[in-house]
Image 1: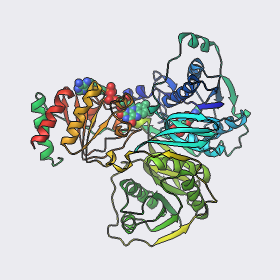
Image 2: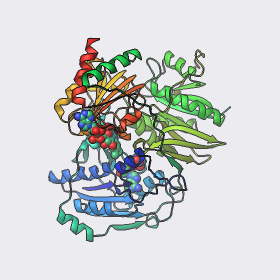
Image 3: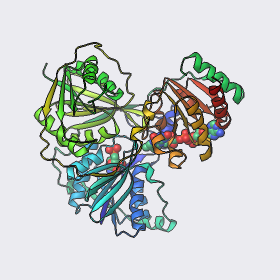
Image 4: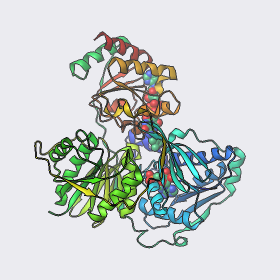
Length: 265
Length: 326
Ligand SMILES: Cc1cc2nc3c(=O)[nH]c(=O)nc-3n(C[C@H](O)[C@H](O)[C@H](O)COP(=O)(O)OP(=O)(O)OC[C@H]3O[C@@H](n4cnc5c(N)ncnc54)[C@H](O)[C@@H]3O)c2cc1C
Ligand SMILES: Nc1ncnc2c1ncn2[C@@H]1O[C@H](COP(=O)(O)O)[C@@H](O)[C@H]1O
């Protein structure tokens, strides 16, 4: 079974969060690009969990060929990480200076999957931690005519079908569809594993397969962005916290008093 | 006026419009005004009289009720019905109140209509026919502004709590509800539901008036009971940050935040929660936010109205006792 995991390189969200909270997230003259060079780039955490989902299938004895594909990365450390975890092939789709939006990225990923022999299962993260859009997997599914199941905590393909446990606001939902399908993975899947030292060393020497936009037969319309990021800023946080002093009992009594006074409770 | 901003909803067959739809209509109104367009509702399934009145109060000029043959949100049928509807009734600006189900339906519809899809919208600005959509990004740490090309079709999904819903036209007469049929071309649901979630019937964190939430500062699983106790004493519900859900101290249905529940209670008490943006997305709209944290520099205090610097394991039981004293 061929499984393709789409993995995006993102800025470390924890680092972005700390800088933003400290009021030190630097945005360049173009009004949209982070200029801090100290923010690490890594694989979107949900995409790493998508790889983990595949490794669990392998642990359970399934014969899977895992391809991990990324579009437009700055460096390929995240793909080497995928190799060290046991990906059979990692692919970087280089976009050069072409400005692509996430709609184009979905076209590129769909075209890659199609032209590389298709996939029995396409796994994506539920959303990328930079843009939070969660749109790319749905678009890939539509472009490839595959059913799409979002927000999974468990994915088990068997006998031409895939059974998925989805995490819905009301609790777990168990669904099933015929393969091929697109499934998006959520954090409830659980912690991804670490590669062994040996696997890391070996992966360091390997190179991703490089695919260029020209290798994929995409027309101009597919590569025309629908949206353009024109600005990015840190929103203001409202403030003015009234601190309530005293030991636990005194502070608790005072707080409850205030909440009553405010008619909140 | 011939152009419309079309707001897509479903589940409007009973009762009034939900908060998400009211918020989406509030934002759509400004968008429509700036575009010189009117507002139309496209509902999958029936629209109750109350929902129609609510829609009018929020400035909707027309309501189409598209008949569908589906129980629950069967995404394939929903997408096919909306595709057929918009192919028969083209619209340049389509708006969805953002819910768990609509995120998937709206993004898929975008592919069918070759439209741009923009999720997590919190505001718009318009210059002529060019729409700039401001969206939440990086888990709430930033706002990104996406410029939408003039002349294209766009689907905007409105972030819950993006605005305070505000009727513009209270008491306006409800527009007639046009029954519309959409040819779904025999679309079959490809996804079979084997087991439905259990919590569908119970009270929902999203609607709770009081939420007491715990985080990693609780130290261990057993201490989540302190959160449950205070929630019970205040007639509220218990919530949690993601790490303690991941660790099994609380259930996924209790997770508050970007990838959990978006709450809007009158009172939110956060105990042992640091205030990461991804958590705050789910509670920053609380009318009164209380933070209990032993670190006086914790980010959560920036969002809070009242703060207690202290050990939540000591403060929570005292709060419960004080609340019970009445
Ligand atoms: C893409 C993405 C999506 C995410 N989605 C969500 C989401 O939906 N919801 C969510 O919550 N998080 C989410 N997160 C995680 C988020 O970034 C934070 O890691 C998380 O919210 C932190 O949880 P916490 O506050 O419980 O733990 P911590 O950040 O570890 O904070 C614990 C706090 O407890 C305090 N403390 C410790 N002991 C005590 C004590 N005895 N008494 C009082 N205070 C004490 C500490 O000072 C600290 O401030 C997401 C992250 C990413 C990257
Ligand atoms: N540039 C990219 N390269 C590879 N996969 C991507 C890329 N962008 C998005 N994806 C996939 O689509 C998911 C959702 O991304 P998004 O729609 O941008 O939130 C991610 O978790 C990835 O699995």
